Length: 586
Image (tube, rainbow, N blue to C red):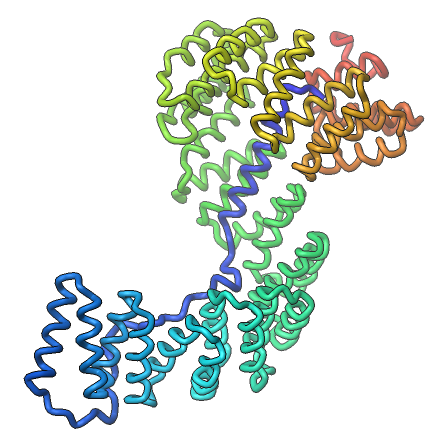
């Protein structure tokens, strides 16, 4: 594969996944939190203590209020707590609890809440607050009697109460103790789906995956339409494999086609699995339900852009823009790319030029200059980049990279190499500049520089998968030091196991080492992940060598329609099947 294109291969897929992930569902752990200290007009307790408001009590209350106003909560809490102890008045105890909670005085808050609950035993609010405070204490078992009473006193809402309780307990450090307590509390309510789901969540947090799955299945049996249970079950299945989760989603949506939260998670998982066409179909269904959702429109636009459906991409980008999507610069950048693809260069310049700041600015300027080159204005393009004043070293490096890329695209490889070399003098340990110069060095056959730079890159950044891969692939492509090349590529694959281009490199080195059967299998896997021209060129060549020439020619012919200028594909065809090339290219 051509080494120079490693950097930008997965950008569109990453953008889709990023946008899709922004559409996160309200997962089980994200249920609305319990109001620990609800505000509003308190309900007067039925039995208030018969206590005279003495001068001493009045003094303490005034002291507390003044201290609170002056930002001295410790003094205020102590004053009010003394009044609560003496009077046993639930109103004072509630006020003290609230002040102590806000001041993070846990011990005092717990004492005040205890007074409040005992003074007003019928108060559901007092019991909730007491529970919230107890679950933050050690040991957790102290809270169980209070929780049992709370749940028993409100059986009509036991499901929602368990959901609230699970989130409250989710912050506790002892996950196994939480599970044990929740299982005990759940026994009287085994026919309530939300209760079973709460136990499933606690089991998941305690790493008891088997119990988690059985409890979430039980919740779905009790209430099949409970989407949150379906999402949790899919999450548990995904821990084993994405394939199982996808199958579950498909079956569930057949039974409940209006389960849009499930459909959204299904679509996101399809994106993760690089099943872009299937994901797009699901997102289109969601847009039909929520046509003004900017995030949905943006996701479908990105998927359409990746599949080169420019009309659909433009439609949904404009829809996202009209709906007020938060990343308008990404929309402008994408609309510029569409105009550029259509060769509407003046329109593309308008879109790119409209981005005047922010994170997308430098990328937009690089695209702007690239359009000028396509108009035959190389000097103007370079001057445009050179006229931009970088705000920091990172932007300076980005500008150099952009200019070098213009030269590379114009096949002025030596000029690009020299420009990067000059910039490296001022930033000798810039990983980006070292990597880019290594890629250009391959074009001018400076393999010594390529290897030196890439080895320096992995010294500076040991998790740079593409550097390992580029070096390994170069050695394999030149049929040199093949065992070392394979080790380098395998290291890259450890760092990025789902990268189609690294898998392609592994298939290529296996082929060079004479293991054609494994090479075919590996390259098929890479091509299934991404129908890229270079991956397809390699797969076709290995199939050709394996005697499967009709299949090889079919792959090449299909790829040639969409990628007529790809260097690797054209070079492969010139060597093996020149009849497939247009007459002018032979």
